[in-house]
Image (tube, rainbow, N blue to C red; front, side, top):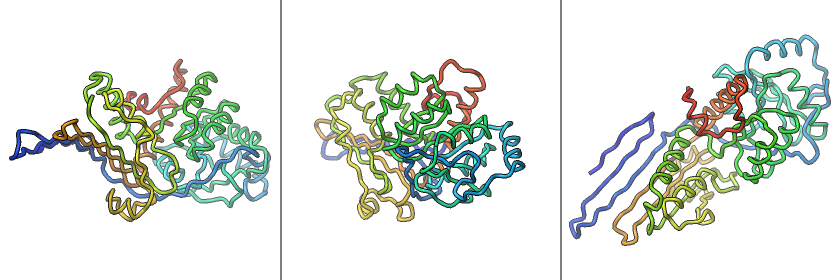
Length: 355
């Protein structure tokens, strides 16, 4: 027998099947996040050891001078709306966020801090030019801030650069949304909090997945030890370019630990081989370059009761939309002069301004 409810396109289903050979009951709980449009992925490195920028007054990536008229138009246009600079916009995640931001009415800053020098790219009709990493990145950031005073940075780079990027944003007192996972998260939060800088930092930007994550934390806080004695298997599959263990999986495991499960983060199984992703995890071939499939399977000590929690995401639109909501929320908090300055996606959800 099964029953289910649908909340904002997320299906919560419980199932119970009677066993004819015994009175034991097998139960499962499943959460499916609907598939989203594929964007693919090709993240680029945001290296900071040699600096990220072009000299003030130089055309980014081309060496040509900006005209005074072009600069004046940009300053005028950016003075009324929140602007977002996306680092690194050359990656598929960065481009997905850029598209979602423009659809939401935000101004896309036509500059991006990136790794090696590259030619400008077109994103939704906006020509985005790159600051050359061999130049002074401090001058580059100040140039962008002067032209776009309401600028918020969105970071989708690589794990190894998370902390140094945050230190750079702190140095320039530039509010940011950190969508990149990995790095030293404890140091990241400590540095931003001590600096008093406005920021949204979260390992998961998908709103519905964050809601599930929050629900698991509430469950753990309300019923500690409820699953004591159970064993658990956690499997997460992401595109092969993702080198670190899912931050979302780590957060969910933390809740399960509080529910009484003896399970460590290093026991999470990472699936990155494409053949296994398709055969075992049932990832559609067209989404191999952009997906997040998570399964948490719990079994009672006697083996007669099973619970399964699952959220499968194809594409990146769910993360892009959530990132834009985070930027909009942060802009509102800045305008309000909020005493609280460091936020996560649960804070964004609580604001209730989801689009």
